Length: 112
Ligand SMILES: [Zn+2]
Image 1 (cartoon, rainbow, N blue to C red):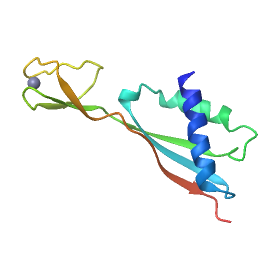
Image 2: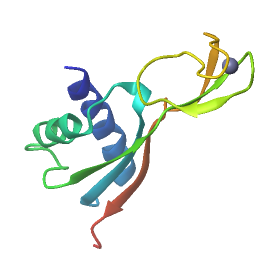
Image 3: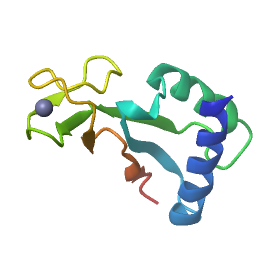
Image 4: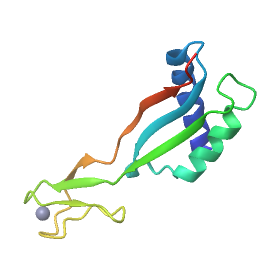
């Protein structure tokens, strides 16, 4: 599953950064064009961290709406459906401004 491998990747990065300190919450930002379902990701997180040093931590997902710009006329809009078609001039050539993010924004650690 897509989400499961992503959680493994996130866990690897988190462990590297947190060191020995227990992690309370992992905040991630994910663009909607990534086609990741936040609820599924959170569920997978609970599976991936079982029995690991991250057990008990929480994954908090911030979903970023996709924003694109028409190359032809410069019109920009937020995608409500994965249709890359300019509503103003009908152009097919659009560039993605936002929505492809995938990053860990912050870690909340337990005070030791
Ligand atoms: Zn256009």
